Length: 160
Image (cartoon, rainbow, N blue to C red; front, side, top):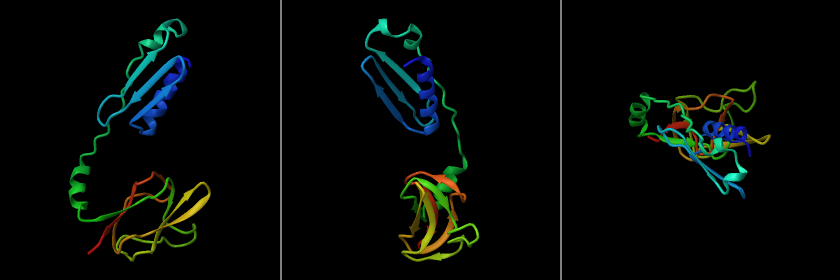
């Protein structure tokens, strides 16, 4: 593994949002840790100094850009009375069953347990996501045709 490979690995981990990645081979051990609001730290341990170039030992930490969202704190307190519908899988979020059809749910619509609220496409399979709660849709948290992660909030529902 050369220095370019390690730099590419660091960039990939920084973009992926992973908190820690460990890579271990016979002659090298790399641990990349990221923290919220902290700089990314890269630690490189070598099995033998003769096998690796000296510049790899003195790897510089890579700074992760810190995004501060001041409205998140105020929104969190307002949204605490609502229940969140979260994504059960990784994929692409769609609000409509097809481009020429209307959306499943709009803000203000009432949903019942078992109602389809969206579709998430994963590996060319379109999975209908059903509501597990009854209530009124207060907010749609994801844009149509956007990628979503596992357990990412999709909708806010007022159960009252």
